[in-house]
Length: 190
Image (tube, rainbow, N blue to C red):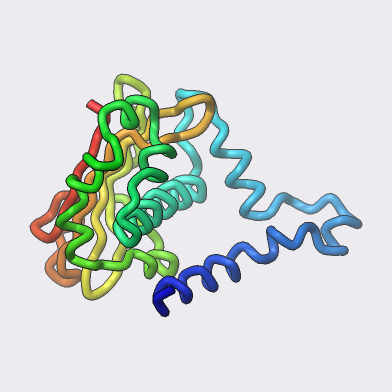
């Protein structure tokens, strides 16, 4: 296991360790407000016409980019495909996704630093006419900024990836648009 991969695993374990350990003594004695994890779980199961709150959008963006990162690092795009909406799955087998993300994979960019940066949207989250959620923005990492344009379909109360464009641009010259001049990849269901 490479050092970067090991570091990422440790960081993720540290971030979620409190939630894995179960409730603390203080939490079992009083009925406190739910923590961030409980809040996110509650807000991902929403009716088709509701836009998730800011915290849930942040998790949705990061989780998607980290899944793309894992697929690029491992060369295995099965999980990315399996977590996506049915239409995305039917149009994109793992081999096709490997071809779509080949240039981004070849650039050997590790998206793990997004854990330390908050994604920024360049337009308000919006529902398309067909009820899909569109998120466009960037993660202000350096030296390369990660740009994204994602579309999610509400499938059985969960927002699932239905289309994605990912690119990188130099941070100081970045235009904050997905599909910038740097390395890019695009996959969608239609």
